[in-house]
Image 1 (cartoon, rainbow, N blue to C red):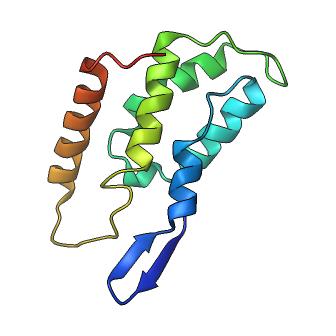
Image 2 (image 1 turned 135 degrees about the vertical axis):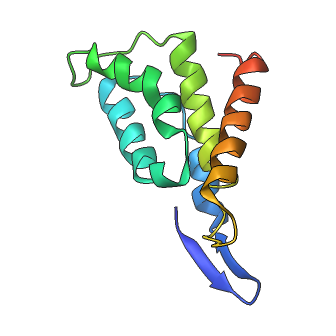
Image 3 (image 1 turned 90 degrees about the horizontal axis):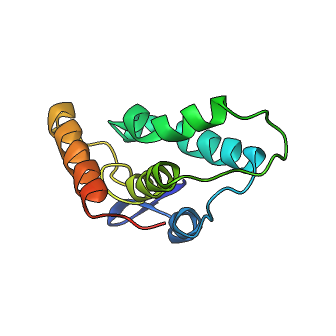
Length: 123
C-alpha cells in the first residue's frame, strides 16, 4: 500500500486499496503465500494480525507447496476476508498519530474482528 501526501495530509492511493479489496481467494499454495507475504508486510498495522492469519498459516503448514490446488475451508475464507477488511480500513489506512494509543487500537481491532466473525461471513 502506498500513501500520498496532499494538502489534506496523508492518504492511501485508491487503486492500491481497490487491488486489495478485489484480491480473489487463493487457489494454489503459491497464491496463498503471495497473499500472506503482501499482508504480512502490513502486520504492524493490524494489532491482532497473528490471530486473524492463524487459519491461513496453519493451513499453509499442512500443504506440500508449489502449485498444489487448495481445499479452502470456511475458516480460511473467514480469515482471508477478515485480513482484507483489516488492511482496507482503520487503523491500517490511518497514518501514525502519536495521540492514538496502542491499547485503543488493539481493542478496536479485536472488536472489529469479533463483529466480522459474528456476522456470519459467507464463503
